[in-house]
Structure formats: C-alpha cells, structure tokens
Length: 399
Image 1 (cartoon, rainbow, N blue to C red):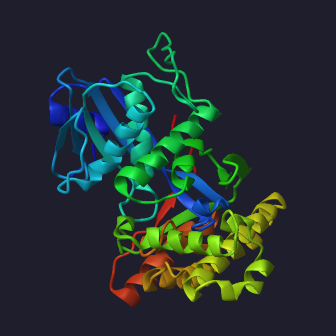
Image 2 (cartoon, rainbow, N blue to C red):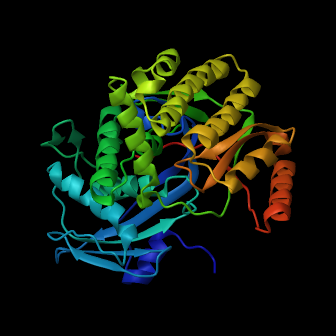
C-alpha cells in the first residue's frame, strides 16, 4: 500500500481538508550516550525522517486523533485529558497539551491525523518528534508565543500568506523544555533535553553540539561522510523502566560524590572515590564521565577536520555503553562489529537509549552502497534476520 501524507490521511479520516500541517524531524545521537540528563555534552543531528500532523480546529471541545501507525482512534475532551491504556501512543500528544495549558496557552478542540516516517523503536526519537509536532500544530491553529514565564500576552502574527513568524532561539528552547516536561510528567520517561533540542535546533549538513548544563547549542559542519542507520529489529520500550533506572544510578552516584551532577566529576576524582559508590553506580558514572570527555575530544577532531579520529570516538563510545552502562544488546554489538570490518566505515555505535534499536555508522559517501550491502548480507547470515540499512540526510530542525 503506497504511503500517504498526513493531509491525505486526514482527508480519509475526517472527510475534509485539514486547516494546518506541522512536522518535526527525528534525530540521531552521534555521540554522548546518556549524558544529557547528567548535564553533560552531546552531539546529534536532525534527520530526514519526520512526524507530520495535519489538523483542523473543532467547536465541540473534543480532540480526535488518527494515526498512520496505530489502527485505533483516540477521542477525549479538552477538559478531561487522561491516559488511555488502549492508546499509549497518544500520551505524547496529551502530555504536550497539558504542559501548554500549564503555561497558559489557550486552545480548543481539534481533529488531527498523525503520520510518521520514523521507524518505531529504532532510537531515532519518534516520541520527541511527535511532541514537537504537536506543540507546533497547536501553535498553527491557536497561535501562541512562549517565554520563560509562560504564554506571552501577544500571540505571533500571520503574514499575508497566513504563515506565522518563525521561532526564535529562546522560544525554541522554551518549547524543547515544555516537550521534555510532557515526557517526564505524563509519559513517565525521565529523559533529558537531547531529543527535543535536536528536533528543534537541527541544521542541514551540521552536527549539533549541545551543552545540557548551560542549554546552549553550537553547530559544526560534517561533510564528506554519510550517516547510515542499521535497525536491529529489536524494539526497545523505554517506558519499561530501564532508562529511568540508569538515570537513578547516575544521580545517586553524583550525590554520593557530593557533585551537582556527573558533569562536575573528573575521571581522576571518580576513580579515587570508587569505594563511595556501589558497583553499578560506579559503572554508570564511569561511562558518563568518559563519554563527556569523548564529546570534547570529538569536537576538537571535527575542528581539525580529522574525521577518522572522530569516528574512533564513536567506536569507543559503543564499547563503553556495552561494557559499563550495559544498555547494548547482542544484535547491536554484532552490527558495530560488522561495521568495523568494512574499510569505508570511520565509526559506529548504538544510538539513542539502547536496549535494542539501531546503530549509526559514519561511512565515506562513495562506499555507502557497498557498506550497506555488506551489513545486510552479513547480518542476515549470522542472525537469520533481514536488515535494511538506510542513509539519513542531516536536515534543518522544526519551526
């Protein structure tokens, strides 16, 4: 069955044309695994896989959602936003709506169709893209502006073509925090800001360098190599608790070391105070502190145009995630090992929360087809599973 756009999905679901459309890209975490909620450093890119939402206001105070991925509709009142165990995918939309209301944003009911080209469970953050797209489509229907205190008194104006003015840096950051709060409070994943910032601040052909303590973003060019994603087919479900458990270990380690966060801990200090931590706390802290250092070194390698060294930090990151954070799995390890064997691959690692999902590999453009054939053939031979590697283009963020 050919894929349809969100607007066409809306027409089929509601029998009229949507008033507004918004979309937000997924992301790939290039380096900095589980460092964001430790106030650390992360490198990421926004990629050409999107959540797109087509929507129209309605006057009955109801919200109705249809999805290209999930068969069941979800209906609820604007005044009664609750979890529905039968439609957990809608929690990301509902969480954003509740956070918008907390900020003083006024909106009424609407109908919406949600389409996704982001593979579920692949570690490309379809959840954050859904949150960002939700906030943006509500802004399109019921214009609002955010500042640090909440909704501004004056909403954004439309131009002659009916387009709203774009988001400024401060407002993008406010929107990222709002979407993070939605996932923390309503969905129950105690995530950091990486995913939402990546979706909003991405820049085509550039890597994002994110400082999660000071919440600043810089961009560095990344040209000459392709980002190849290989999905293990092992689906992760971070709501299941593994992600939250890792965060708890990291935060308890920081408390035991009397540090504000693991960002404040030097490796020498960590090793000297190992006996103050449980074995699991030490392993998680060792990974995070080392990973923050790797991001610093990787940024330097990019500035010096040393992409081969940059790729080595990706391999090192995966080894640390596998051996210390322990959020890898045999299929991820196999994919990284297969990538390492191909001469065109500069670096490879798991991307995202882990416990399944996908790897990201940095591959010379002229060897991409040969690399993908190598990965698909070797993975199927060793696991019996089909593998469909995809090349992701680095794109601009939403808004």
